Length: 456
Ligand code: MN
Ligand code: MN
Image 1 (spheres, rainbow, N blue to C red):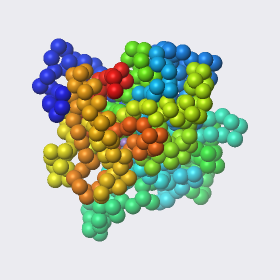
Image 2: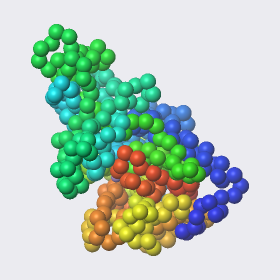
Image 3: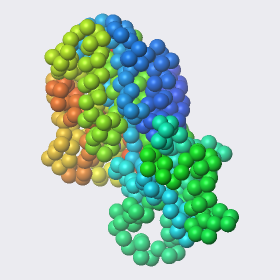
Image 4: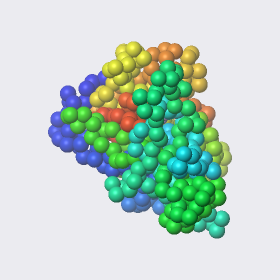
């Protein structure tokens, strides 16, 4: 159903199903504040549905369910179909990383009798949105003996929260004259972590006290942060949003909303005809680079492993499997904001409660950097969605020349597979409080499920 309001057709208990799915999604979001936490939870949910680590399966056959994890931050799940892999796969690909602040390698310092953590922001953020909001710290500190210490502060109601201070309005005459991208500068995004001096310490006593606390709680030294990955993110769980509770407010919904709906579509479906795959990557927000990003050879390597286990051959089989595959690049889209509607094209922008958004192209200016989906493929998707009675709409990231963005679609398109961006519309994208519609979340799950089993 193209461009129709979901609530106008919500009969036979659909509202209850939307609500029930939203509760499960909120629980996932509230737990999964980093890509590592996402990978852990995805593996847990997949194992509960019978998935096994691929290395434990020496051979695979129709109906088998395996997963591969890459460096704790990137995971791919496969359900082997009744057809050979070389007939092509149905792939859902989402990213697990979200914009945030990362601790630097030597983060702790003292100034004006306060202890602070120095950060470097990650991904595209409006820096001024990250001051004076409660923040949490999640991550790992890897030690020379090979062990890893986890740090999670700020989510439990009994935990303290952290935060970045901002100048009081009374003294902000000069600051308020600055342009929005200079109001809060990157080097000012430092997190306040303490104020009590260590007794008997004469120099940097507050810093010394935090170091002693870190040693006591985590068994780590200042030097151990050289090999740490600590992410500073908005604190607190996902919440219902709006007087009618029709929406969800939370950090990290770009792109965990598409990750969760993709995961559930793969886990909940029946044994597929064509092999289905859910690929969850890291580093999308900084260009899909690195070993755990979509540009990594990890995904190709896993498919080669799977083909070997299925007895289907090597590189040529892999190229054929990829070229004959269909993919949805599961990523969010910008919803038209009622207050800033001029930034979008009213007829072509995504709207709340109209279901999954199929975005033919992303990119900036004259479609620069876009993976422009083929109309033949889009026609097939329209048929699959209409046959399954799924609400869908189209979207474009803002009006022409308003800006732009990209996803992982162009990377998968290199394999010569058919790929289109498809996901949930979001308000406040990349802010500490991103907002989505519960109905769109559920409909996107239905759309991914229809895609995995549909005849394309
Ligand atoms: Mn995204
Ligand atoms: Mn993004």
